[in-house]
Length: 219
Image (cartoon, rainbow, N blue to C red; front, side, top):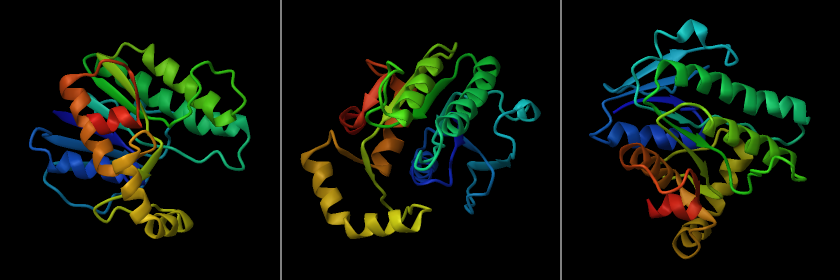
């Protein structure tokens, strides 16, 4: 399996990258980002790219892959809907449309979030934008596309959030998060489980295109 990973420096992306590098069935990982991961591994190749609204200059680099794990995301706090849509919908679809054209047999996996609004008409701005993003991804001519909607995600194996106060919260709440993952899988998963589940849906598929936390943990 040859994989493209977007968002490899974020918390979720770090976890997905770790599982890809550990999995003997993943032959190579191309990490596309604005900054490097700082990691060195025989499977890993990194491409730095500034304009995430236009991937035409990278087309030769993005051909011949089996899967994309799209883990980029920003918080909607303090953002207008127009700005959030541009950084969420526009960036994701710019990448996905290019990849669907170049790799029609690709499986595309997108990290969304619990509470995403598939109707696109709910009260929560971020949920509407994520819903529109999911819906339009599912219309693209990929071999398959899966929308991952985790609720809480516990970082494991030294993975850290880039946001200081969020990382402090994770450290302080670690025992509670571990307990929730065991007793309430609908509300909590881990970076390891997300990464493993992404790899598994590429290999084996899944019975539905939208996966909640309990589906992720089951996989």
